[in-house]
Image (cartoon, rainbow, N blue to C red; front, side, top):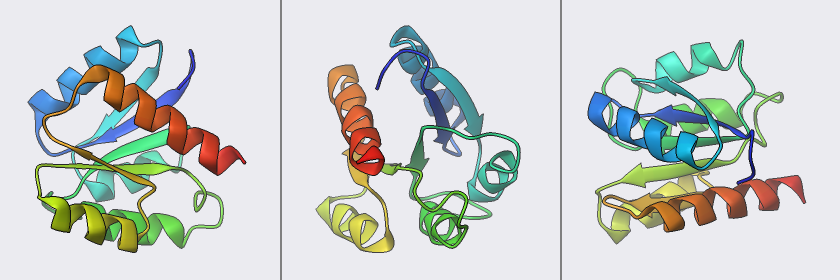
Length: 126
């Protein structure tokens, strides 16, 4: 992921947002967060994260709607987005088809999280 990377965490669960903030800040990232896809889209008007971690199931605007709208925005279309969810492998297939760059099943370990973020960022940069 690299020190100084900015990560946008989008999840309706405040405890998960807080835990991810702590884990990612310990890994050297700057973390911003939103409680749903609509809040995240509003944040993207003023922030430019290097990578986005996005839950699939959220009220207001879920992860699928968020990534669809993000990919329609020419300024943000190439931002790597990793789905985070407790949904089974069906969720992983659906997330990939929807335009997510990766999938991280809950619960996850820190090393796997950091590795997936770094890989997604590197693929989008190439």
